[in-house]
Image (cartoon, rainbow, N blue to C red; front, side):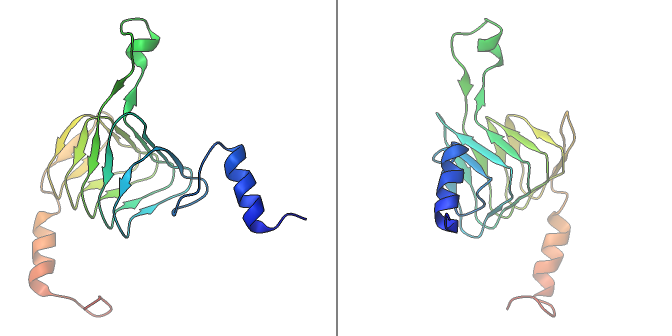
Length: 161
């Protein structure tokens, strides 16, 4: 009988994946930088091969999210010799909803929310934004007033001190 540690090792080997602190079904290629307290749900993928991926601290990345620095469509249709790769930066305290895609060149500001199913393309998204849809619609500063009000109020019942 195979023990659980051996099963996990064999499973990851079979899936061509490696051990990670998130979930055995989070695929990680390359060496992304992930901040402390960040959660990444199962069946998500981070492809940082060939470019830099920086994910801030205390982010919540739902299941079925793809974060991918590479774009091979021009190579595949014969108009480029190589795939294009671009860095991705995700600020601190960012929520990324299920089935979202973060593409190379995206720069997501801190305290932003990426709605479920959103495709985030290259460009800067300001802090505290709500981003939804495909094509994405950015609502800059959407959460700023609520955040500022919460900071003025201070911690409430059940909140950490």
